[in-house]
Image (tube, rainbow, N blue to C red):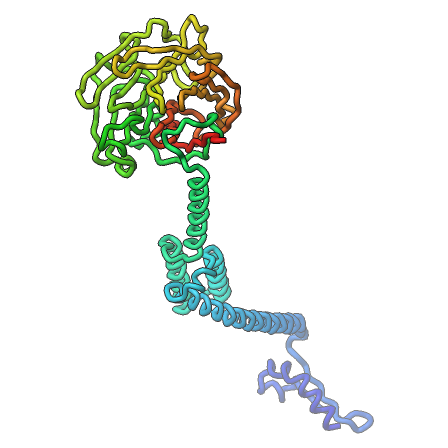
Amino acid sequence: MLPILLLLLQVLSPTLAWIPVEDWESGNVTSSVGDSGQCVCQVYLPDTNFPADRVQHMQEVSKDLIQEVRLQKNKIESYEVKLEAYLKELQALQIRVSNLGSSAEDYIKLDFELLRIELREFESLVSQLKDAFNSSSPMFDSLYTEIRNMTLIVNQLESYDKNNLQVIRIEFAKLQKKLEKCQKEQEFLKPDIGNCNHTGIMSISKPMVAQLNSHLQPGYIYGGWGKDSKPAKGSESMYFYSGYNALLTHQFRFYPDYKNLLLMKASRLVEIPTYNRGYGNNYIVHGNAIYYQRHSPFSMGKFNLSSNQYDSRVIPTASADFSYIYSSYQNMDFAADETGLWVMYASDESKGKIVIAKVNEKGFGIETVWNTAAFKQITNNAFMACGVMYATRSLDLNTEEIYYAFDTKTGEEKHINFPFQKFQETFSNLDYNPTDQLLYMYNNGYYVSYHVKFNMG
């Protein structure tokens, strides 16, 4: 009996708590003995509606809160594990970066881009942690600062990449290959200067590009450069350059040697007066004199660099209507080789085909002429070597071809095929120099030269 009563009291205790104590004896609570002798208690409540729904809601909310707390606790534990792992990686990354200045092997293996990716991953993780905790703390600020500092260090090391041994070794290997190739070419060529005991050109080397013109202007596409093909004593190393953005010829620069040409130093400037100026770019320096195409009257022009004297000769049959493909006003093309001075032109009588004329250097007149079968207007340029005229034309944008040869010693002509590479598509000057057996090309504003190999068999 007593346990049952206590159980009823426990169940009813929350309800009884709403009844004032003074009402307990005022008829709201009564007791009596039942038919079987049991104790019967009767309670009269002022509010008969028990709030069971509110109690159930509170229980559900309590369960949800407990579950959310567990989830957040699991997240925090997971982030703590990740943070510890990434902090270890960050420390390892710090060691790698600190070793850049001390360990060459570590530096060689380092990939800057991978470093930046890792740093971005660290920064993203710190942002996620900061958002998850929804707070800002000195620890996060310190991590941000450290990651940004390391990013700056990596960028600086890449920018000032002076100790990158891998790159240096790769470049050194390239230079070694180039040197070996150059040595092989030199051994292969071994030019026999002045010797014309051969059957003609056998091949042309790859282009040797020196640099952009001395004006450092890519627009100066008209001009020429090279050496005196018959230098005076003491001027064997002299180089000349003349470049323009138009077809007018009036200014030449002379440098004491190749080094000064490249450095653009110690030059002598020669200006041709207005009344003696020329047009076209097929001029040469030969015997300490400039030979060029004079504009008015249309004639051969000569300027003696020693005496500063001008001279000119009209070639009656030469025509100003025929020029090379790449440039206008290239009606007269001067050349020099082991046998002397030449000029090439076309005439109405030759029907536009190239005429070769041997020039008497002392009298500055024409000695002998030869008619060829090469049409000037389908030819890019021409030069003389050992008394043979070689005419060129384009095969494609990057390839030139010597397609025709005429031997003035025998009067024989040949249709040949000797291709060689061009640095750029167009050029305005191409001349052979017998003092070093090089072809000098003014290739769209650049100094370019070629080794010429003759068939000695």
